[in-house]
Image 1 (cartoon, helix red, strand yellow):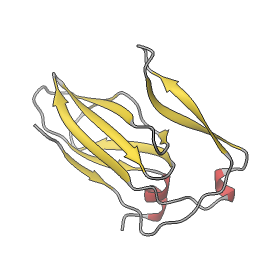
Image 2: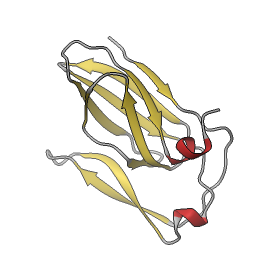
Image 3: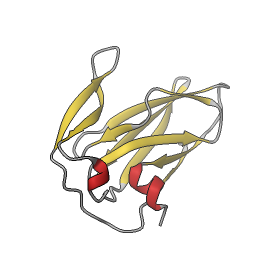
Image 4: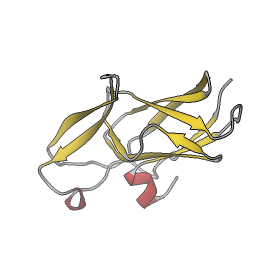
Length: 128
């Protein structure tokens, strides 16, 4: 069973220039699930890049599992569902080469959600 996932694509590629360092965010079981950023420069002082987030979703037990990856750093990645439920994480940074695994537990068992994925660039510059 697969969910319908709509990544929001940015209108054009750009470049970001802050000196970024990754910081791991650990889940309760000690596995890395996403990363956060530390920047020498403020994000407001740099052009935010279009990052092309890839998403795979599948149902496992009562929860949906989403695997996300990005071609370039994606800041403040958030996922929306068209049904009520709870995400395991939100508003995280996704770096190239580091997948994030997010769980979504629907409020009502058996519900099939449609997901929309956004990041700082697509949320502020709009979809293509």
